[in-house]
Amino acid sequence: MSDLNNMSDGNGWGNAYEVHASGKHGTEPDFLWDQRPHPFIEEINFVYQLRNKRAEIIIDAGCGDGRNSLFLAQCGFSVLGIDISEKAVEIARSRAFKAGYTNLMFLL
Image 1 (spheres, rainbow, N blue to C red):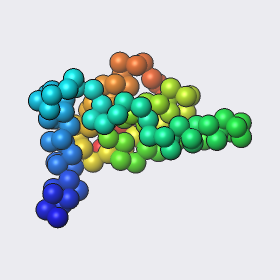
Image 2 (cartoon, helix red, strand yellow):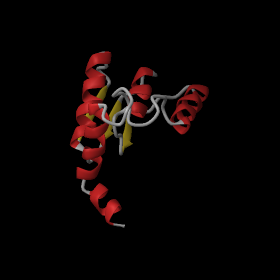
Image 3 (tube, rainbow, N blue to C red):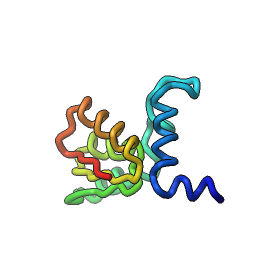
Image 4 (cartoon, rainbow, N blue to C red):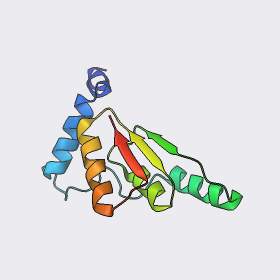
């Protein structure tokens, strides 16, 4: 249970992203999890396209390193990603900047 408590303040998640970004876990520093967006996020985009509607803005609460936010921005949505981990938000902002997205913002 103490591990869950450590993660809830953002420091635990920050440490996880630090280790991942350093490459010490044995793989290249990329996304902490899979690079593809969560399948549910892909379905949201599909449903909106079928209905021919667009949301004003999509809020990705608990955005982590931004994989879902980046996908939604790529699909043309305006996205606000929010996370408690400063390191995760730093990584997400860097990826958004490198991709040149202007319809995407990340906050702590």
